[in-house]
Length: 237
Image 1 (cartoon, helix red, strand yellow):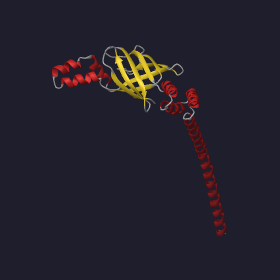
Image 2 (cartoon, helix red, strand yellow; image 1 turned 120 degrees about the vertical axis):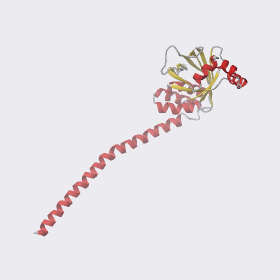
Image 3 (cartoon, one colour; image 1 turned 90 degrees about the horizontal axis):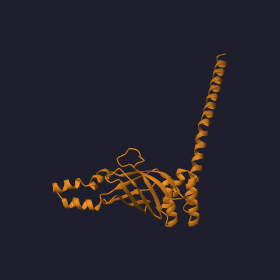
Image 4 (cartoon, helix red, strand yellow; image 1 turned 45 degrees about the horizontal axis):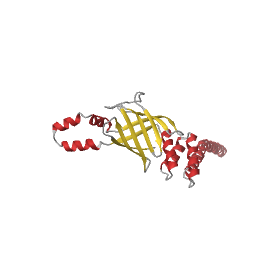
């Protein structure tokens, strides 16, 4: 009798174990399904981006230009950035121009580093430790503006029209957010960008003239009225 009860107990234990194993298998299957789906989606996305990279780097300049135009039209930020970066580094002037126009549609802000104007640097060097001359220089508008700009010039971009190569730039000088009183239109001409507008500086009528350089960098100058120009540079994307 005891042997019979032992056999029954063993069978129940085996049944419980089998149920538990089945439960674990089912649970693992539930967990694995989303992971498998995510892995497939990730693989598909990676393949899509790789295809765009290859197309936007096509050796045929006409095809490359067409692919970059299509990439811009997709509205897909990742695709736009891949193709715009390739366009900016192109040795074809037309493709670089398209890349520059598209870059302002693919980004909402530029961050320019600002250097001291050579004229101001020369004046400070000539003044040396002469406190009187240093005090005179401190009163110059260009010195006051440099104190505001030395940590960077931030530009907010809006209203970019790729086909026309224009966009509206808002200089965030002394501002936490854009102000419609301080803005201007930027125009792309070849590998150059020209902006004319106003900024919250000593003399508010300002202009920016920059050229696309190697490594997708904009280099040029910021000038306000008749004051010495500030050398500036910014990395695109």
